[in-house]
Length: 279
Image (cartoon, rainbow, N blue to C red; front, side):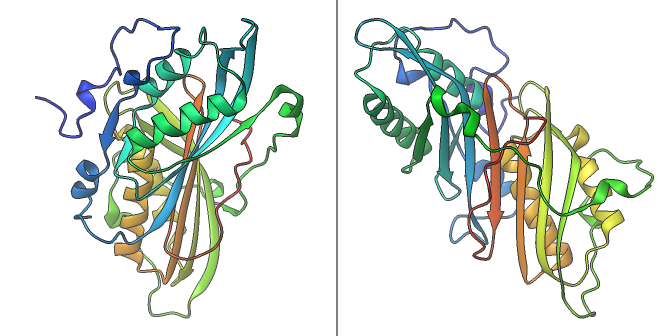
């Protein structure tokens, strides 16, 4: 049976011939709405805003004299774009630039902006870091109270929103909670995806043991990064009813790419793109 997300038609889990000449047709878009329907988000106004922050570590092309150039890129995709782009297709697309001659970084950026906007269905922000600035790329861990300190028993490894609860009748608290134990699996291949997650909220104090059990529950769950973060956001909103909520996950890279989704219902400024130790 075909995957209703449309991901079965992607290059994931299939043998791929690596093209080394520019080919934007390699990009594979998947509508976000498939999975949003599953978590009860029908078309219309979203209960959150946010971005997906992509970092691409393996970008190379040739200058007009045939000399290889290298860079790293940050791509910021708005959460209200109609599509995500499947990450293996993104990798194949970037590799298609390897033997492509370009007239400089502006020519590269113009290509990337046009091709990615066409597939995500919305404008994206792209910036390059050149080798002379590699040492300036920031590193750091997500701040907050570490949930992983809790000595809990875990028996379920699929997401169970009923584990989430909060002291809704008590005065509101403002907390930032962090766990490094988030693991989910690729929607198509089942390969593991590892992440650290940060939850900022204002509202009744969330039961931390239940929250940690819930997050660990993604361990055998198959979903793309962006979809996991939106599921976490919606489950916490529905079960704990905070006044404010932001969920940010930093996933480890695969294929030279990492994807870091952030969803929030209050204006706190876009989160830092500092690379975690595991990234």
